[in-house]
Image 1 (cartoon, rainbow, N blue to C red):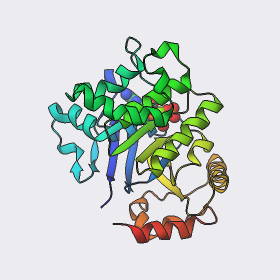
Image 2: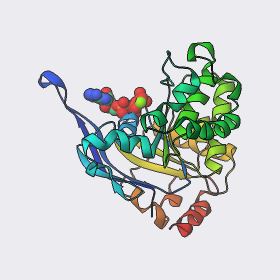
Image 3: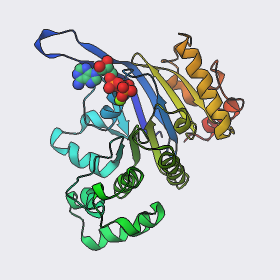
Length: 289
Ligand SMILES: Nc1ncnc2c1ncn2[C@@H]1O[C@H](COP(=O)(O)OP(=O)(O)OP(=O)(O)O)[C@@H](O)[C@H]1O
Ligand SMILES: [Mg+2]
């Protein structure tokens, strides 16, 4: 069973004062399997944050469904949404979203405090994560006392500490210098190898080249995807760049209706793909639960 499934998501923003409405998502269907690391790319305004907000239950789709681990998000009552989010999802944002009046440690504990966990349990969870992320020595510091990269690592710790089913990240490297950005990507790779499912929106080809699959969104539909297969990061980088070049020229064909069929092997035949994408895809498809 897929960990995450979206079916025919549509989102229309109604502007106030009777202005024109915006159809940010037209028809988005895709699935994410347990343990996958999926990047979502697309031009500014293509609907990436809108999609992530809906997956995060921060916003509601106008039409369509989101199913996380068998649970229909649209079926979660409003009063239970915060708890659902806390228990199932981890977030990493471009701007870190840490509270300045809390130490890094207290920021990281926050979701567990809200869930009513005891201090001993919180500490038991934090110690190995902090060691892994290399932030054990700075936990007592405040966000304004540490670097952007350190803030982002604390934000990743806050996302991981609830043992979320999936991590949703919106431009997590957007505010980082290249060194911190590389460190964060290495970290994501590490937690993904340890089994954590990740869905990351990014503008960065380099960031996306670390993922096991890249979805391309344009004008509110997913119209292309690349599977890593056996490709190296470098080959993946090239395949993503090639796709973006085709897109920038106005090329590319829609495969919005095909993404739901990812398991049946269509994606590997996409017009721009890595040399190994087809075989890698077949392996993924064959192993589907
Ligand atoms: N709250 C809102 N009310 C009205 N329109 C909105 C709202 N949020 C987003 N939009 C519009 O929906 C479309 C998609 O926006 P979205 O923020 O999802 O894009 P994005 O792909 O995340 O862009 P970026 O890469 O710049 O972050 C845009 O046309 C945007 O102007
Ligand atoms: Mg955005």
